[in-house]
Length: 125
Length: 97
Image (cartoon, rainbow over all chains, first blue to last red; front, side):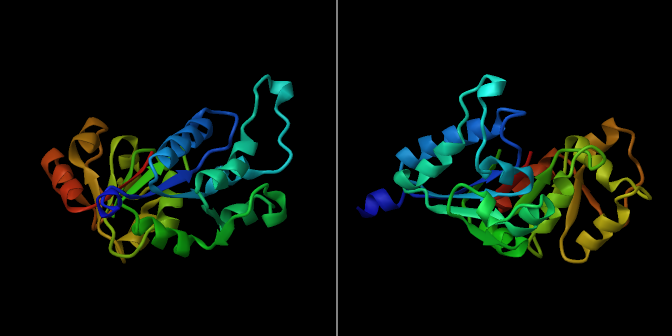
């Protein structure tokens, strides 16, 4: 067990882009799922347009893609439970916690910045 | 934690976003098109000066030279590739791509 623990890294994924205009969010989500399989200490921060990835009621049939917002709801099942949303990013988009489809912790930028600083690795998407 | 920024602030909000999450004392390094941020007397000079109050700010010299940027906001330091490597050796990375 101790040997296994030595390989655990604190890794934060930072989602910064809106979900469908580019493939960053989708690729980021895939990377999170792959890393979860290796039992790393994962957290995900949603900042800037990244908060749009969590918006409820995304219906993507009309743009011909499957949509992946519901996969964020499944992260819990992969033990990825630390989801943080930047309060200022939500507010400037006129959104609130009720507009998001998963349970997240809403934090101010300073608090998320401090969490970033505690990570071994920070990966932006 | 070393923060690198590679986007022009005129084109993208990456620098502003980075600065909002930046912890005091952490170095910031502008590279590629990010270096346009530190040219003196531009729209972002006051943001750079504000950052310099709590954080060291660097720009990569070869990227400045490639873009003809010779005058920098006062207090911004330049590093060459070896300096870049030294910063990376000393700090964990946060690349704001």
